[in-house]
Length: 483
Ligand SMILES: Cc1cc2nc3c(=O)[nH]c(=O)nc-3n(C[C@H](O)[C@H](O)[C@H](O)COP(=O)(O)OP(=O)(O)OC[C@H]3O[C@@H](n4cnc5c(N)ncnc54)[C@H](O)[C@@H]3O)c2cc1C
Image 1: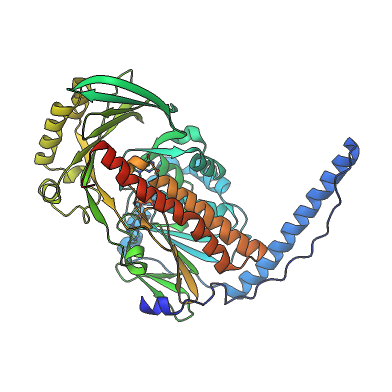
Image 2 (image 1 turned 90 degrees about the vertical axis):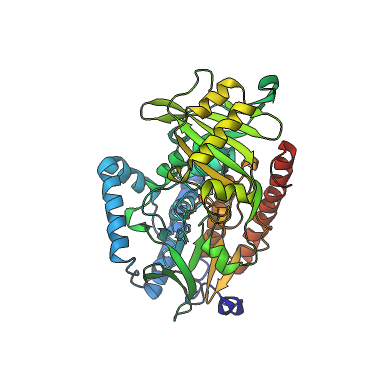
């Protein structure tokens, strides 16, 4: 990685000459009368089409100059697993998904720039679909797990900006938001009884990881999503471009490596190794059960002293279920005793890793702290997960040179933030949208690449720092953890 750092000033697009700026004919202001304005609009449309065609022409010339055969990806087992996964998936959804993929794809006006996205959860697929929509067509997503696996589970609140971004890539809100309430009911609890409530509005809607992930990945072109592909290293290749190395020995080359590989990011470890994860001293225990109280249709937050319990309805094949999260303080030793590993190593505890001791502990805490109706939800839940709450030092950069190419960190890979901020998923989507705009400005309008990426970084770093600062403040106000 030292080598990567030394080559600071190399340019991502050194291999290709920038196309000359297209000459544009200009129109005067639109006339005031209706007929004149209509003629003017028609003329403007023709000019816009001519301009787009001229740009596409330039890009075709570039693509010819730089085209390289795609890397053969993955070990035989990797490919078999990925193939089996996609065959299963397609058997269930083929006709609808073909139409969705066509709708999400747009002409490859930015061919010539290849992007490898590491991580196929939320941030990675959003980034991929945004790139495709902006006309980039050499975009591949590499996901370590062979099948969809949540890393945080459950309900995720997406703000209006994120929902708007998803809308632009053809994911209508109705597809991922089965319960559209904006209300948040916060209920103060004392001695297991309500001591007052406050109603506020969340500026967005609640989805679940499963719904969002499914909506995103079913729109990815099949050849562009490589599952069972765990990146282990990154280095400049013989032509200067970043080479991604995968477990099992396969590799891929791209101009840009975008790391969206989550809390335990390999990209962060390689590019920014001095920001280790720190355990915050509490755990988000999560559960899902198959039924839901009839009066639970808003986001509900119970607030006994020193803890928090939230609940929201979820849709499942058989009807309406409940998703809950119960935050409880726990020392690192207690975490190890309950879940068999350090909290900075086992950053997501899957249902099969929940020990009987952990289950009994959470049940007892529910009985001690929650109103009987909420405790009953916990006691009846068989599917449980747990997420240790983690902190990290604020990042100082998001962009890194790798030979003549670039690598970027975004989403939880850049910085996982505490769940109470409701910012983790939103930050990743915001950053993805900004990154695609920066690269589209570079390819379409010949904006200086480094200036565009520096501006992207300068815009989003303060937002991440703000979320990282807010998290401990909220945890402290609730009375959770070390802070
Ligand atoms: C209790 C709780 C509540 C939350 N509520 C909200 C909320 O209301 N709003 C909100 O915005 N956010 C919320 N979040 C945060 C949100 O879930 C995360 O920020 C979001 O899932 C991060 O998405 P991501 O795609 O960046 O990373 P992840 O979801 O962590 O995905 C990373 C992906 O990369 C893959 N990967 C890892 N290593 C490699 C590798 N070496 N090679 C290839 N692939 C790899 C992983 O398998 C995974 O699929 C919450 C989190 C928790 C725990």
